[in-house]
Length: 240
Length: 306
Image 1 (cartoon, one colour):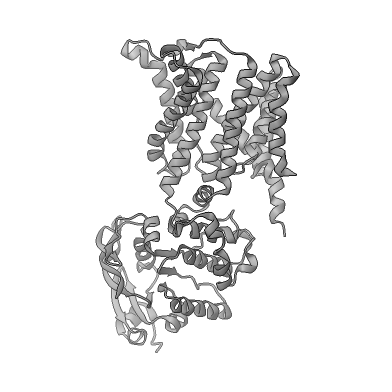
Image 2 (spheres, each protein chain N blue to C red):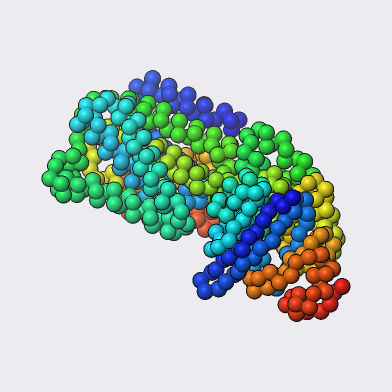
């Protein structure tokens, strides 16, 4: 079953066509990777799906209903959220409070109900040791985990991860990939934008390649990586 | 101990009139209460969401005029009049907020400043333009003198306590977390499911209700109001300075700021106006540069030291 269907999506910034006529589906429970050179439109695509920007054409269907006209908080409640490439925690709130906000508003529950559910998420992402620190006081890898913690807090079924693994050392990267696999086991559907091919090949079941706002390839990661157009546009050399 | 401070202070203030003090002291304390209320109300929107409102005096003026007109022209009693002041301010804020709250940063500040100035001009010129007697233009409105100083002392005390309590509860509740999330990262707040527009407009209207009610009391207390006085931008500036001085985005920061600066104004400002203004400027510079979270920030920072 398709959880998300993207149909003929278009977005222009002035004269620049950031996305032109992009269509694809995301199946329930899969891990889909999106790769492509800088400026290919990956982040724009995420912002359109999450509702931060409105598309200039095309449509988005989530669980069969159009969500293209909804504001981000409604899309979040419907079940889609996003982690940002540039981490944007609520700086003057503690780590725990950051997750609390996502729980309360993403699931529309009271503060009391949400209070009891922060622990499990913080433990799962191994940031419970810093739960009472301000989000300014924790390291970048932990802030990236916090972004993910907030996504889990909202209870969204589909999580869009925008370069959540960038800037991590090899051990942290390995842990990050384990978390992604574990999320899948817990029934989450993930769309991952990433430049680290090791991570992409390690977790993704299917790949989409964007270049200059267009989808140039789609399929099994190994097939996509041996596609000449993909090698020319993005990879530069044969990696598999 | 800090928990007991608020009820203790409230109790002392409630019992104070038993001492039968001179009228001057009630007037001074009433002034302090008024400013605690105004600074706290301003802080609720601007301190918690980071949307710095430069037009708050607009709601103060609306509140003043609503009560003055209802009492003098419609013969309405005092309490329903100030309630009407609050409701009217809140309704106007719903409309203004829905449009200005889309703007960010300085644009919001300028839009709200323009709203307050426009409101002032409407009250000033309405009668002359339409050849009627309603707002009474620059003549102002004189209200009946009916009550003793202790009446206003208690009215301000009760209303301002309710305002501070409201801020206190909002700070700890879901609503407060929405406001803080908006202040820190509005896009992230939306992604976490916060209906940012709803919360922004709601809190702006709540602030306006508070300021409107205070304006209504102010009109009856002063017994004479004029547009240049009750719509003066200096009132907004005072709210901002008091909140900044004590600590924006905290519950008791604006209370402390209002107490200290109202007292300073009363003691120094009355005799040495220019010394007071100079001192105010220096204090504000020091606060902004060295204590960006205000004096209350000094206390709460300890919580997070490693």
